[in-house]
Amino acid sequence: MVHAADQVKAAELDRTLIALADPTRRGVIDLLRRAPHRASDIADRLGTSRPAMSRHLRVLRHGGLVETFEDDDARVRVYRLRPEKLRSLRAWLEEVEQFWTVELGAFQDHVERTRGKR
Image 1: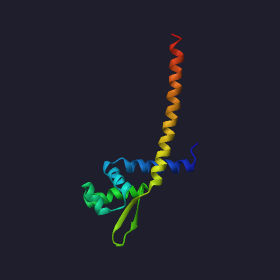
Image 2: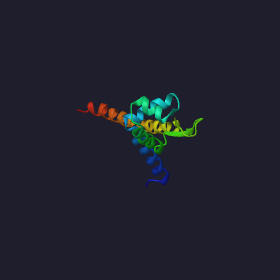
Image 3: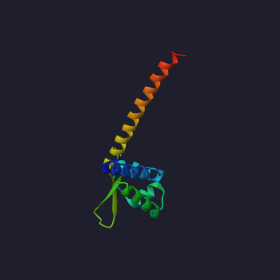
Image 4: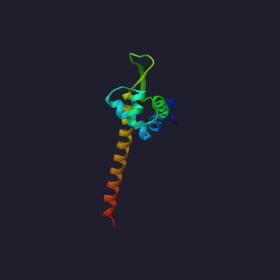
């Protein structure tokens, strides 16, 4: 039985992975790792039209990977990275890696035990 909390975590992970599936959005993440940027600057740096960048940034916001804050000019949106979502992704990846490490170790042990029985 899947608990509601597990379903929420799975949905959040899905949104994160969907957001990171596109190379342009991963480029945005790379830029924002270094410093916050205005949406127009991100579009210019990545060679993307502003309307297309707006759509990419919406997906990243929906995935919880970026957030906006107001600069000195309230008319301009500045984006920054929300690293806690990346930490959640890293924790999930570590769980998957640990699972497969144990499974592959057990398989290797099995192969070595049965190899001598032939």
